[in-house]
Image (cartoon, rainbow, N blue to C red; front, side, top):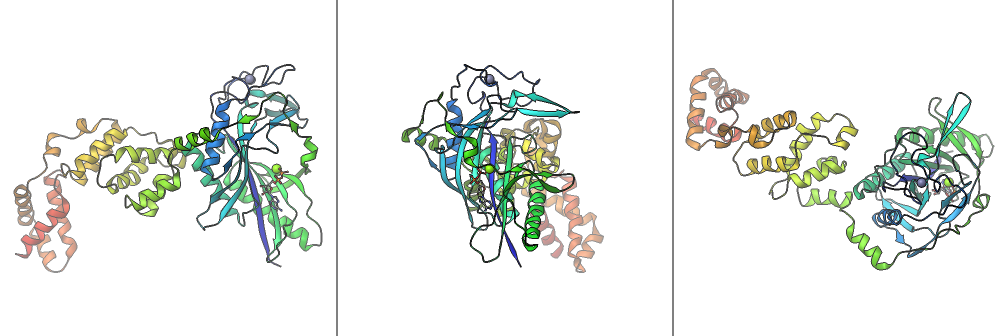
Amino acid sequence: MEYELVMGLETHIELSTNTKIFCSCTTEFGGEPNTHCCPICIGLPGTMPKLNREVVKYAIMVGLATNCDIAEIAKMDRKNYVYPDLPKAYQISEYDMPICEHGHIELSNGRKIGLTRIHIEEDAGKLIHDRGQTFIDYNRGGVPLIEIVSEPDFRSVEEAIEYLERLQLIVKYIGVSDCKMQEGSMRCDVNVSVRPVGVKEFGIRTEIKNMNSFTNISRAVKYEMQRQIDLIENGEKVVQETRRFDDVLGVTESMRGKEDAHDYRYFREPDLVTIKTTKEEINAIKDSLPELPDKRLARYIKDYGLSEVDARLIVKYKRVADFFELSTKGLKSYKSCSNLILSLIFSKLDSDSEKEEFNIKVTAEDMNELLNLLESGKITNNIAKRALEDMLNTGKNVKDILSDDDLKGLDENELKSICDQAVKSNPLAVKDYLAGKEKAVKALIGFVMKTTKGRADARTAEKFIIDMIKK
Ligand code: ADP
Ligand code: MG
Ligand code: ZN
């Protein structure tokens, strides 16, 4: 029998507010264990949490960017469970009145993945297991999180990964988290079930906890899907449970039975007031949202005439796209900028993370100056490339790199006379060209470029040379 995958994702994203969700401790990553802590975030009795409004604002921003309805009234609840990473023995989260609901993210195949809800909550501390002992670092405890719960709408791993990439990019554009899976600021619980193709009802699901890379999500889901199919084919039943992925063995294994909501004995957090947000506040947040990646992409293709491939490569990295925006300010053509970024600049940034960081020695202002010179015909494409290469290597600005000669340009008569020299001093190439070897003209253009140190426009030179030869 053929089976279909059904999948839903619960994605946790750490928010980059300066301070924690209920106290004024720093949210900074790392640090000596238990130094980013205070009586509130280590849960000493008698302390009172106070909600950081910035957290609410960040969550609403993500909600608006993912087509959610925003709740004017929300509240926080206690989710009770006993585990040493949680000093109070409960996590403050949102249960039945989350801040955002009913959103969606559209995939490139046109399918809309529903977002059930986005809620805010506090992160737990970190357990470090070492030679039979367990140490606890509460620095992460109380760092604000949003949890984005999707509907069980995914039908392939590829869809899930595209969704995560899109979500990641949206959140980075808004600037509320760096969404680094390898540092844990974005983590996923993956819910997996299978059903025979054609059947409407969902199968029993398992939940794989705390996935921290796309590769592992893909490996885990493929393994888990096959495991469930094998069980069903053997006449056994899938058990609803929580599993973990062993990335060395490449298998999922049972951790514990699945808890239900009633196991957590949710009740309203009595130490916090209702979260009220007015329509006006929500609208103001909406107006303050930056341009989102999809919109930028459409603009680059439609208004700027970039190819879809080029536009995607630029939009994929927020810093690259911002650099592109500033570099092209006031220009008529955007293509030379995207070409230079994707060829010369990207050739210096090998990995994805280098492109993401986009640490280059050229400022957008300098790039803009260079592109202005190119567009106004004061320098040729060759000189622009040479200058940019120099700028990237040395960090010098345009003016320091371009000589007076570079900026002078060539007038037509000067260019004609150099083309004439080229023709006269390369009789062999001329002969080859006349004999039908069209490529031979390249040698003549090369002569012109060398003599003019790249100041000549290659296309004009080619035209002049061919005219002269044919005369
Ligand atoms: P819990 O919070 O207890 O894990 P939820 O009902 O909130 O349970 O669902 C969690 C996730 O499981 C959601 O992302 C949802 O889309 C997904 N899900 C629910 N049912 C299924 C199913 N049969 N197969 C796959 N995923 C499912
Ligand atoms: Mg869950
Ligand atoms: Zn604290």
